[in-house]
Length: 316
Length: 316
Image (tube, rainbow over all chains, first blue to last red; front, side, top):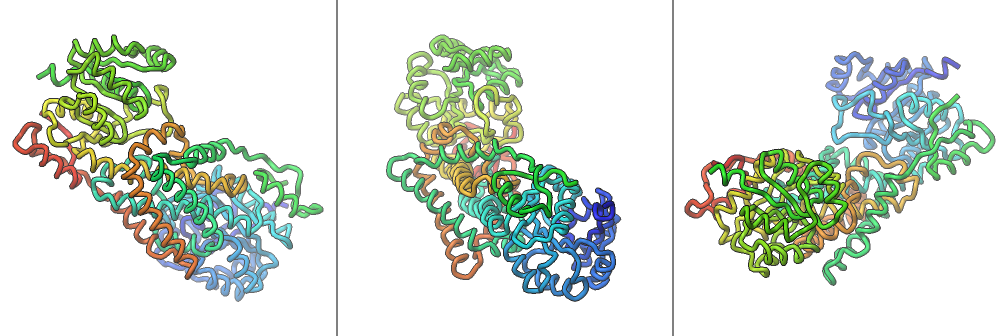
């Protein structure tokens, strides 16, 4: 039990999220080490006292020997390369990821025949900074961490992934990959796209406008400070769901625009927006206490509870 | 000189902005008192030790006697009522306002024949809270405060208004009313509209989406927590400029949407948004030191300096 509770963790990619997982896992008492492609990133992490290497083969062979849980923390464009190495050097390890979008990762994992012990994950935390320098052991404290409950999920692997999330300080939200991707299109990818549009429209007002900008513009454009490559890597793999969210938004904005042109009012948008924001603020997560991984029908029951706002806060 | 430096201040409307002006003015050593329409607001301000009344006639007659600077802090829909009282009881007082939009206020002031000693103002600060309870003497510290430099502006009144802004802790940005309104449409009113649309689109993903929402959604929707009536009162009077900003935004979002549908990329929006945000972050205000109110051509020179990012930080 103790062995399973703090099984070894091998993080692949030590950017903001992967780096924070490494820090949080070590802080929680896990044996944890990591791979990072860039030597600069490796040196920075080592200088901070972490066990990080740019030798993927050695890192993965050690994971295979230790039966470590692999945590993929690279952006989507680097996923295939990492999976092909995992397939070569540690094909039997339990596997999770902290990449934003879930269905495309699951599809790639299946393509590399690594699906049997894969459980997708997505900690809902970040900053507009990126890279090891921005990582912190406390990034996930109080956050939610989506953990996949798609049909066929391996109960023991699920528990290892969920336990890591809990030990990093997060609440676990059980979710299907497709439903996760639809949800994050609306609450993570759409905010990025709107922030970029707001930044461009604001700058269209020149230095006078940018000089007068205060809290509403600063907050509304905060995530536009994220590097452009990273934003594309996060949003574009979720194109279908993001298109749906963008089309809804364009309809809402066009209706408000037309109403403003026709009769000088912003129409229903303002009341609807206020209600939606209040609904978000008032949303209370509740604790799922009656489902254990591996129980009869546990995947369906966790899925259904997650849809209704349930989270897991402890695992026996 | 001392008399002019800390001339009496009479604030009309003690909500978030007007209330904060009253607090900041008192903290800076001004004799200051205020009117508020709602008795609850009056009681709350009095309980905090401020000289506030709901008797507009008494408040304005005192201002006339003391030659106070009137500061209008009511939302647009209440402006006519306040101006008609000013016209009746204190028509010769110097007059400014802290209402978001400037050209419509200037027009109303002219309609009441109060234009001779009017200088429009707009402190670029706020919170999503409103009312006296949210006000604070430090709200304007480090903020910018737009002060109008339209043709015909009275130099001494301008100095009184600018000095009040400086004494409240703000930097003064000299600006034409029309250019101000175009600028704030992009960096204040548009952020409100986008925040409302994001909140609605996010809530369209149900409790799962709202439960997964983290920093990007929270920041992107923060100002949607502002009361709907106040958002309409801020944005709708600036319909023409806001339509222009909304049309730009719709073009940007539609191009990104079409690009995402056609080839799976968000196109140029992400790079442009990143650059615009960085431009905002890197923008440095510089101090205008070579123009004194009343100097030859001072209005044009201040206007031109303000357009280039100049601010006033001291007045002799």
